[in-house]
Amino acid sequence: MEKGGWVYILTNKYHTVLYTGVTSDLRQRTYDHQNGTYPGSFTSRYKAAKLVYYYFYDSIEDAINEEKRIKAGSRQKKILLINQMNLSWRDLTPDIQD
Image (cartoon, rainbow, N blue to C red):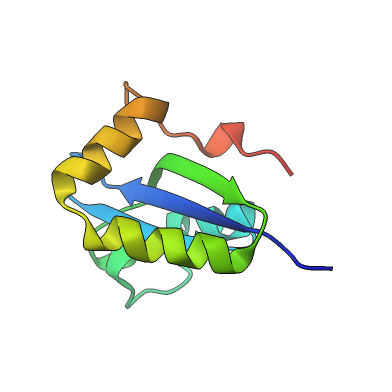
């Protein structure tokens, strides 16, 4: 059985940094970002730990392809994507379902 994947976008307190990632376990990966599990990582250096966008794909390959598409896009396209789901840019971590 194939496991799906999540594409997500994190930002920092001032919304000056956007980080796009992909994972098969959004709850654990968000925890890792918010708790600095990987101190040398981009998200730790720039304090990008606020989950502002996420979307589930049935296939991890589809999620990876979408992550690449989003990363290749402009900052403005990422902002539009976030605004479609989360106009107030609140932290969506509490909304994550198992």
